[in-house]
Amino acid sequence: LNVTDIFCYQETEVNFKSYVAKINGQRVHVNAKEIEILKYLLQNEGHVLSRDQILTNVWKESEEIPYDRVIDVYIKELRKKLALDCIVTIRNVGYKLERR
Image (cartoon, rainbow, N blue to C red; front, side, top):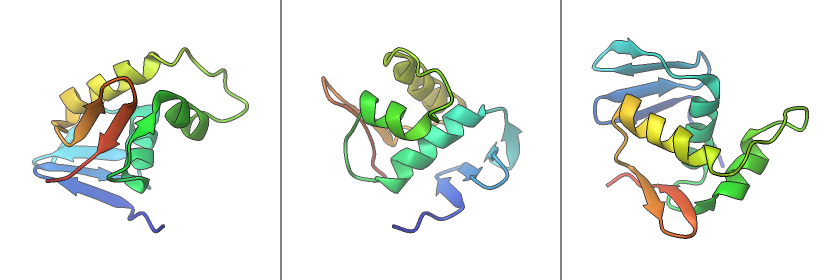
């Protein structure tokens, strides 16, 4: 699966190489974990990912793995900061990225 280095959705653009996010060309501060979660969702676009899967794949083994509800906070921030209504909550399962 080949993930592009740049994610574009409506007015939002995220560069996964430089970790820069922009809306309408204006930089938005997004932390590294938020970008990594977005990238993982993008790599699995259209598929539902559980919080556990996100934690397992985004956090490195050397890092302390947080409580799974932390994912909810990151998703909320991503949606808010980057206007990403394409991140869909699947009740009792997890999240998926779905561009309409």
